[in-house]
Amino acid sequence: MRALAAVVTAISALNRIIGHVFSWLALGIVVVCFTVVVQRYVFAISHVWMQDLYIWLNGAMFTAVAGFALLRDDHVRVDIFYRPASIPKKALIDLIGVVLFLVPFCIVVYLYAMPFVQRSWGYYEASANIGGLEGLFILKSFIIVFAVLVGLQGLAMAGRAILTLKGRDELLPERLRYKLDIDHITEAAE
Image (tube, rainbow, N blue to C red):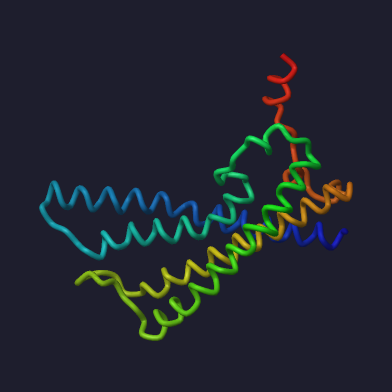
C-alpha cells in the first residue's frame, strides 16, 4: 500500500508541476493577443504567425494542464450522486468512473491520435496559413501529452480510491485525501 501511495503522490506531483508551469502560458496568450489587436487596429498591420501563436499557446496550455485540472477536481462533474456521498462512496464512484470511462477514453485518444501525430512529425507539418508558424507537429504532439497526463492522473485517482476503500488513506499527503463537502453537510443539518 505504501508503494501505491508513493505512485499516487508522484503522479500528482508531476501533474502539479506541469500544471503550474503551463498555466503561465495564459499570460503569454493575453500578451500576444493584445499585441495582435493593437497592431491590427492601431497600426493597421498584421502578422499571421502572431495570430497562430496565441491560438497554439492556448491549445498547448489546455491540453497540458488537463491532468492538473483533474487533480484539482476542476473538471465538470454531475454532482447529483457525488456531492452528498460519503467518502467511501466518493472513492467507489471515482474508481468505477476511472476504470469504465476515463482510462478507456485516454486509450482511445492515444491510439487514434498517434498515427495523426506521427504523420505530422514525418513531414514536419507547419501552419496551413501563409506566413504562419512552423512546427505544428509539436503542437499536435500535445494530444498525446493530454492522453498520457490525464490517463496517469486517472490512475492516481484510482489508487487514491483504493487506498481510501482499504482504510489506508493516511498514507497519502493531506492535500490528496478525500474531503467531505462541508456546505452539503450544513445544508442537510438545517
